[in-house]
Structures are given as structure tokens and as C-alpha cells.
Length: 363
Image (cartoon, rainbow, N blue to C red; front, side, top):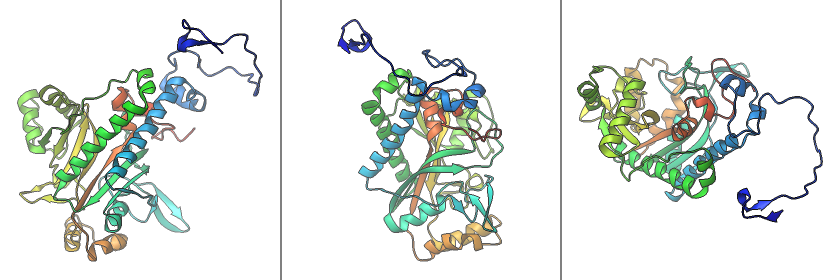
């Protein structure tokens, strides 16, 4: 290697010699020596074991590693403890989400939809915990933003006043992740043409009923009375946040209790709505979180109100509250969706190492 100012990188190889370590006789499924991969998504995914060698793919998944590193770094600095919880569980945790059932030595078990129950339990041990790990959703979605296994960045924290304390920590985490990427992964960001999002010190927030009123007033669509926002509604709110607050992030708070799991804390001033939130990133839901119930009797009442007649699957979970838990809350960030929105990808599968969806179980 010889210094050469005119060469890319400032150096030039002269008179190189090569030694073949592993001979290849078959043609590649698609070229890897081009600046961009020219393969359709299905073809790429079928041959991901080779396609992931492309420099842009390496850069993308280095960014994924950077997001996890920034997540951990920020939370460690805030006094959180990392935990790892079981992925084989005895009961479902999230209302409205299907589960993958498995045979566990003759017993019925499930792949965990989230670490929700366990991370709440661990608040009683460490007060502030987080986890990075896979979660599984047996939902028959076939969209560009859903997959059936993804990496969830989970947080739970105790001794909060309400969900706004959780939102403040989430804001710090998002800003910490972005700062880490800018300082440690600048070459990867440049290679992928990433446009870094605008993330002010305080993200704007809008109450769910007010968001529905805004959608009606500004875009003429009446979604009042609906328990959730449609993807188009989220995109509109993302546009509004950017125009009005110069922010690529916006909180929607106070989703209807009917839409949230049974462990969600209601808004004391407006009990039909919850002390919960979604964080939209460039018009797409990135994070769900909120305040949880913390009193034992509240759990019994909530479970009964949701029609749970057999509470045996929840016995160990409820035991933590029987012996006292502080007011607490948390959130979960979808890693692949974060990368999708950061890079402006049109399909979450492009941000997933080996996607699992309705039709794909290999490679």
C-alpha cells in the first residue's frame, strides 16, 4: 500500500498478489460489487446469507448495533439495570395480540409477546430496568411495517408521578441514541444517505381526543369515537408536528382504555382514557408506553372488568403487587421500525436481519 493523494482514501495498492482461500464456482444470485443492490426484496431475502455481505447492508446492520449500544449507554447513565427475561411463558401478556403456542414437555406454553410482566416484576427488585431481546406476535399482518418476530427495546421504571415521567425518559433515550449514532457511526450514516431527524429537547404532545379533533378540522376526516389512529392519521400528525414544532417526533397521549391492556393506568381526570402514549417518528408509531396499575386490588378489578374469569395464569405476576409495588411505567421501542424510519425505507423487512412474517421462515 502506497500513499497516493489522488486515490480514494489516499492510498493505492500496487502489485497485489492474491491467494484463493475458498474457491467459488457458482454464479452469485445478484452482483455484490455495485454501489446499490439490484435485487427485488423477495430475491434478496431468499439469498440474504449472501446479500448481507454488500457494504450498504453491513452499514445498515451496524447502525442497528449502534441503536442498541446508544440505548444501553443512555439507560446505564440514568441508573437502569439490564435484565433478560424468559421467552417461553405460561400466558399471553398483550390484549389484542395473538400468540405462538408451543408444546413445553406436554404443557401449553407461548412465545413471549413482550417482557411486560417480567419487567414490571423487576421494578420491585431494581426500580429501573431495561431489556433488549426478541418478541413474537402471531398477528396475520402482511404490511410493510409489521413482522412476526422483532427486537424490542424495553424499559420499565418505578416511583413515577404519571406517564409524563416515562415520556421524559423516553425523550432522553431517543436523543441519546441519535447522539451516539452521530458520534460513533458517521461513516455508516453517510454511506446510507441518512437524514438525521429533528429531535428537540422536549417532544410535542397531543391528547388523543384533541388529535382526533385536529384530524377532522385540518384534514376533514372524522375519526372521533374510534379507539385508535389509522396509519394515515399518524402520517398527518407527523406532518403537523414537523410544521408546527419543527420536530420529527410527537407524542399522542391518552389512548382509550378500551384499546390498552388491562394493566394500563386510567387517567384519573378522564377514566375512559389512559395514562398511556404512542410516540410517532416521522408519522409512524415507533413506541408504545405509559403508566401501569400498581395496586393489587386494581389488578383484580381490571382483570374482572376485562372478563378474565380464570386468574391462575397471572398468579405469579399478581404476587408482586400483593406485596407492594411503587407507581411505575415503561415503554418499548421496535428496533427494526426505528431503523426503517431513520433511513426512510419502504419496508421493515429491509431493516430486519432475517425477517419472519406470514410467508417466511427461512433463511
